[in-house]
Length: 460
Image: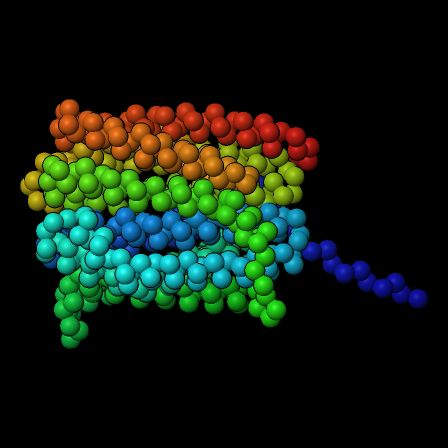
């Protein structure tokens, strides 16, 4: 009598089996590229808007903190989902994977409703608080209201991309981002300047192009999950939110939300500080911050790739792979930071020239960029260690490292140095804040490794 065939053993997820250097590269490169593409939303908007007027560029700089806040809530919730899902996948707990993924969709929609309400009732008050110039107020309000009223697309896009990333499908995640960003890139000049028979919409056209791109990116990411991501499925029939799952998501995600929101707080505070010098200084800082974010996206992609790798192997109790991930990602990130520093040092005028910089903006911006870029390698270490700690389920390290870099030390030091030494001195505040942040992150992550990774026996 023939023996009954045994069912084939489930295939091991690549995050538990692929050599770490190769795994990091294969996961990080699509994320790096996708984040670079994503950052084009704001870069492209600013480049085209700068051709309208410097007032329009200042208006988008004033609106940028609110956009950062939306991204903070979307990305922070997504990071929590990413960490929880990757750990559940590593532990083979597939029923909880489905429940968690469905919870993530619910949280994305609810989060967007908050900003829609703020877009209806709060935009006018925000713009009045930021500037006394009626022209800049009107431009900022018209741009920001469109971005907020139709923001559900960016929340769904971010969440669906995190589902793909949690299962290791970073290339598919990149595809959805490319769709959204390319849509924005094509529509921006058409809608801003009224090409091909379309009406000339000015700054409103930039906002409309952005939200259309976000919605198309969301649709693409959701379809890719449905057809190409068998590791993560949803359960809608009889679904009820589980407070324990929501708590697990925000245990990691809330510190990341706070960390990301600190970029918004920092921009708001720096805008207020720099406005006492000139609106041109505000316009410059908005341009600089978008350029910095664009060049920092590769290290952010590297850090985000480490979250599911570390989370999966933490769930699988493989401490050796966790440590090897850190030994792989930190030198790459430092190299990216040094390369960005060289680029900023050599070509500040050319970078600012992309945004039709005036002579006044160049006079402020060229020495500022050369001062700030010295800190980029330090920022890279803080970034990687923060994301890695999130993969271990501790988002507080990421939050506090970002807080030291962007708010706790930077804002008061910038205010003080502007008054003591003028506009050229204010940028040295970043030297102090970045040094403090990297020292904290190194010591905190060493403690986390001793407490959580050292006791793991498998692979040691």
